[in-house]
Length: 198
Image 1 (cartoon, rainbow, N blue to C red):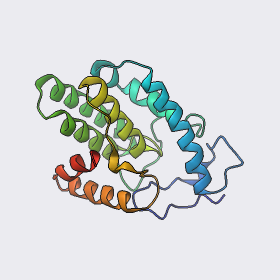
Image 2: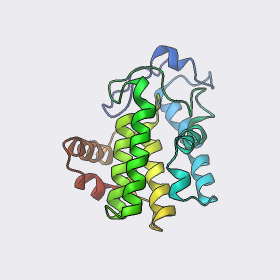
Image 3: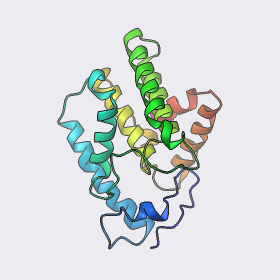
Image 4: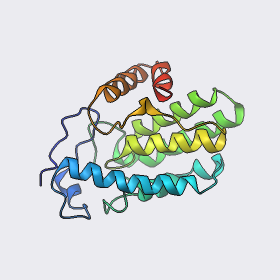
């Protein structure tokens, strides 16, 4: 299969056994995979537009899994299920649920206590969600949509623009995004918050 390891350092490699979960056998290239996944994601986005959410419903393991399943369920058999292998980033596969529970509890505390401005709160949530890396693939796209849902439905603010470009493909916006993520890795979240509204 032509999916091979991605050339972009911001993407997670998919193991050979995980490729077996691909539901469309005619997909042979990374480009075809990205295009099909994008169609699936657009369906999930449409679902979010017609549904009302609040933090209590969104900040649950069940919702995290359900949204990932909606985003990638037409593409991957493992969509919506926590990964069963370790990756080059993320917590150990056996610690995903524990780290996610801590993040959800922290985020509820931030929301209830107005600990951060809404944009920063949502970006901090998104950053930590990606850092956990709950799923085999699609973690960045999933976490960005989670942040969009949270900022729109909990705080009544417009969804993030994320640099005004697709971040699934190499380009200037993705380079700035990866740089902002690296800053966040050092504890400096401001570039990522700024990027989310470019």
